[in-house]
Structures are given as structure tokens and as C-alpha cells.
Image 1 (cartoon, rainbow, N blue to C red):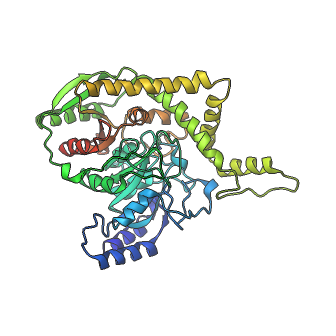
Image 2: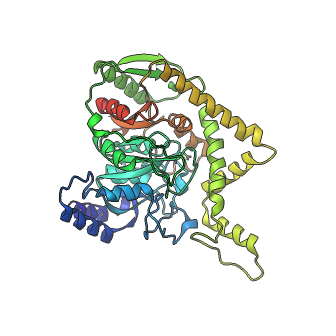
Length: 456
Ligand code: GLN
């Protein structure tokens, strides 16, 4: 019944553009199996989820919202989706996203944008659900599913969660297996859950996590019972407020949200400390060198031979023409921009000036966090985004740098490999949801979720 109800909601909400491929037959089959099993203790038995189109799902179209993967049906299941289904979850379908997870608005998708279910009060204009996990965020916010998978390379779980009033956690790098997830920037990519609240996030993260020998960067560490750690007791915890995150031009509503969140944690018994993360201002430029560099290398595999789309060739065309025509047709503008930036910063003449320098900056950013954690800080509180959800077309039609600036509060977490969570804690003057971000110590997602629980 739960699955049927979600499937009917999805049918009615087609205009949101959240689902790009629906799998009702699979869903009903999985739901029937869940019914037959009854409550056998499987954590997610019969829980209907949406799956971001970046996760390979066996026999089910997986395109990373790109034209170049047109017609691709993986022969294998990603570790994350496999674990979710083994825990009893039901797959409703594949969710919209920015092409190859490159973007902050879901507008680079080959399927067209997803729409934020929220609007400004008294204003009919459609807003972005954020990106790249925009379909996941829209689907959860509009009650089309009980939770969704997302991925976060520079903010793609946390920013859309903040824009749609839901919860999203990016775990520590290595907590969740990347096997079977279409790669964007492998040293930054992590999957995580997007849910209605912190408890659901704890449950889903538990089911997604764990060591996987098929991902060499997956950590061989036990997965704690995250849900059991949600006591709401944060007495004696020390929360850092980083001064570098006070940025010029931050809207008043976000400043206030941050102050209110700080006061809430203090009232709950936490100690609040001003801290400094001095290299924060270099994070965005470093990210936009490292992420495209890795992307240009990862995307070299889309050659028209192994996966998806191949261009129609003219008589006399050779292999070079096949590569060129296939990639010219298959990739969208933002992806091409990243490949060009990436190959440039990795080229012999510029490697030291850009890529190597960005790697050094990354090490400094990581060290900033290590220093505050060594000083006894348990978690860091910041805004999740520099604004509420913006209008469709508003940024994508402007200079790409404007779009990149959206990631100012989130990319440091990926560069340092830390866990970060976005929790909805307020609204702006137009009634749009806003989120706060908590950043935790590596491998301490349980503590982080508990602090977020106190903020919820
Ligand atoms: N907006 C960032 C980018 O475009 C982050 C995307 C992500 O986390 N996948 O690279």
C-alpha cells in the first residue's frame, strides 16, 4: 500500500520532473516480497526509495542525466543500491540530477530541470530544487518517496536538501562504497541519504555504509548503530563557529538562522567557541581545479565504444571522428566546460601552476580542520548555502562562476573528506526553507547526526 501510494503520488507530480525513469513493476515486486517477509527485522523492509540516476541499477536505465549514456543499462548493481535492496527497500525509479552531477541547480540534466515543490509566497515563479541531487530533493520534499539516495562531490546532497527543507548527510570519505556509482571526481565523491528528518537519515546511512572490497578507498571500519545514537543529548559538546564563513553579501535571514542555530545548541548544553579555518577562501578555486581535473580523466571512458551513445558516422570517418562526434553530441555544455578546464590544468605546461597548487591548498584546508578538532571542537556550525532556492534560469544563464559560488560553504568538507549534514532549521522572508550545516570529525557520523537531531 505504501508503494502503491508513492507510485500514484509520482504519477500526479510529473510536472516536478523529479523521476526520469519510473520502475513500478520492480517496485511492486519488491513490495510484495517485503509483505511476504513481514517484519523480519530488515531495517528498510518495504520502504519505497528513489535512486539518483548516478547509481548503476542492474537492467534499469542509468544515464547520469547525460545524453552520452543514452540507452545504457548496467549489467550490475551498485554496492549502495544492492545493500538498500538487501535491507528490504523498494525502488520507485531513477531520479533527475545535473549531468554527471556537475551543477547546483539540476538544470544541466539532459532530461531538463527538476522543480522545487516550494515557491516564494505570493509568487508563482518556479524555483530550482538545487543540484546536483535536485530530483532526489524534490521527490523527498514532495512526498513522492520516503527517502532517496544522493551523491555529494562539492555539496550536491547538502545544498539541494537546504533548498527543499529536507535533511541530507554526506558521510566521511570512504564510509560508503563508490562501486557502481558513475564517477565524477573520485577523490571527492561520496554517496549519502536524503530524507525527511535526521532519524531517517541515520537509518538509511546505516544501510548504505560499510566496507566494500570492490572500492579501494572504502574504509574497513565497523558501522555503528547511528539511530541508537540519537539521544538529543549534546551536553558538554563543543561547537565551533568559523569566522571565515561570515561572508559579505550573506542575506540577513541566513545570518539570523545561523545565530538562532547557535543559540539552540547552546541552550541544549553545548559550549560555543569561535574558531578560525584560515584557508577557507581558497577552497572554491581549489575545488574547481581538482574536480574538473578528475572529471576530465573519468569521462575519457565515454568514447562511443563502451557505453551508450555513438554518433552516426560519415563515409571515411575514422576512430578520431567517432570520438569527436560522439563526445560533441553526447555531452552538454557544462560537462564540456569541465573537461576543457580539467585537461588544461593537467596539461604538461600548467600542471604545477594549477593542479599541484590546488592539491597543496587542499592539504592546508584539511590541516585547518585537523587543528580545530585537535583543539577539542566536536562539530562546526555554518550555513549550508549562501541563499535560499533561486529561480530557474536565474544562474544558469549568467556567468558559470555565479553558479559555482553556491558551493562556498560546502566544498571544504569534500576537500577534507569530512562528514557534513544539512538540516532544515528555518525559512526566509518569502517562506522558503533554509538549512544549517554541521561538519563533524572523520568517522563520527553518529555524533554528527545526534547534534543535528538536537537542532531539528
Ligand atoms: N555544484 C558542485 C559542482 O558542480 C558540486 C556538485 C556535486 O557535489 N556533485 O561541481
